[in-house]
Amino acid sequence: MAAENLEAFFSDTGKSLGTEGVNRSEETIRRYGENTMACGDVMPAGVVYPASTADVQAIVRAANTHGIPLYPVSTGYNIGLGSRAAARAGQVVVDLGYRMNRILEIDEKLAFAVVEPGVSYQALYDELVRRGNKLMLDVTSGPPQGGMIGNALDKGAGYTPYFDHFGFSCGLEIVLGNGEILRTGDGALQSDTLANWHTSKYSFGPILDGLFAQSNYGIVTRMGVWLLPRPPMVRSFHFAFPEDSDLEEVIELCRPMKMSNFVPTLFRVANDLYLCGSEGESAEYHASKGKKSISDDGRRALREKHGLGAWNVSGAFYGPSAAALEPMIQRVRDHFGQSGKAKYIDHADAGGVGPLQVAINAFSGIPSLGELGLLKWRPGGGNLWFLPGTPMDGKIANEFQRICRGIYEEHGMDYMVMNVCGPRFARGLHVMTFNREDAEERARADACYRKMSEEVARRGVYVGRAPIQYHDFHMQQAMPVYRDACNNVKTALDPNGVIAPGRYGIG
Ligand SMILES: Cc1cc2nc3c(=O)[nH]c(=O)nc-3n(C[C@H](O)[C@H](O)[C@H](O)COP(=O)(O)OP(=O)(O)OC[C@H]3O[C@@H](n4cnc5c(N)ncnc54)[C@H](O)[C@@H]3O)c2cc1C
Image: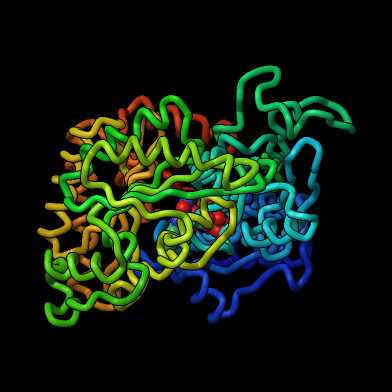
């Protein structure tokens, strides 16, 4: 990319957006390059701030004219997966959220909201509370400043019945790579009024929405989000299991409760370090200079301090009153009680345990900061998420635990994982916290990530989402026909390849 092309791009964009629409200061470039990944910072060429869909079109058209690669972010809190860092150095970050941050609509009768890219979980939650708290949105247990559009497009998820954020979105507006505007679903109708854009997912013709999740085919400027009526009462339940190997039984116990949909939330099945790790720095880190995983004694001490187990199950029921939910809690207690080793922690007691309160908030659609404590488990700010999954079969889940725990230990990392369980499948949220300031530890974290990816792939398991530094690596694990199909769609929708080349290994 020639320097004069870049100058011409920023000059054209400045004319369309005004001076507040462009920032190329050293400080801004440094800030937008920061992230928590092992690859180091990834500096963009500058940042542009559209205020409308028309501005986004102007940016995309200028990028086509001058051959400039763009990198869109919405709220930019994709921590552990790239933050706001571009797919490749030198791309121009399009920060949509800074000025396009309006809640366009809340329909209280049909329970949906329509948002621009900058609307965060916290902002929509606050607005719903302001309107009387009649509706509940599904939140992540990550940063409250993360947002609905960026999270859904990255196939992020929460924990209530509306956990699948892309699945519970409805109707997108997209600026394609050629600068044209596409509306998906019922929005495709040629009409000035659209009655069902954000209420009907499947309309006439192919379902194009999915093309814009984990891809780089367009820039999404508007999205419908479905909301739940807020239940009058949420009652959580929690069980602590003593041994690592109890995971097998835990998965077997969770599956029927989800298969019949008796438990409406997903199960959070978190190990000791996933929960205790958000409560303070590792007491053993400095003694081994970060070269060793925490000892079994160290883990035991943490479990005792917080009253938790090697594995900890959390879920919740919704209903009109605590009394109405009591029989359901009793049934789930009887069910988990069959194991003879589950320690029950009730809703009130769980409220006094920081990491369990995070679970209660997540089940209640309340954004919270607690889990961000995981980033401080080791010093130096490094954080990667490794996101494979397991069928809901206890034996298989336990085998993956054995493999991944072994690889963490081989690399001197601390094994932190939460299996988020549905009826047939559990996503394994593996946290890697490491000292990013220490080159040797950084290299170990990177090697650990790659080895786990290769080992699980050998057993037929793909990741569901990945830190951007590994997008090319994971795309190389796909069958060639899949890679070609992704690249062919890219050519059709973004012929000059201006939108996020390299994101998810495409273009
Ligand atoms: C402790 C911790 C806990 C976490 N828990 C969860 C969790 O429970 N669930 C979960 O899903 N995640 C979780 N995360 C990961 C992450 O922080 C969140 O998913 C966060 O919401 C994503 O950031 P964002 O919403 O700001 O998206 P953004 O950073 O705005 O977007 C993510 C990516 O999507 C693409 N994109 C964004 N907007 C657009 C657009 N308009 N058009 C085209 N492409 C776009 C970009 O490539 C961007 O980099 C957690 C992270 C941490 C550190």
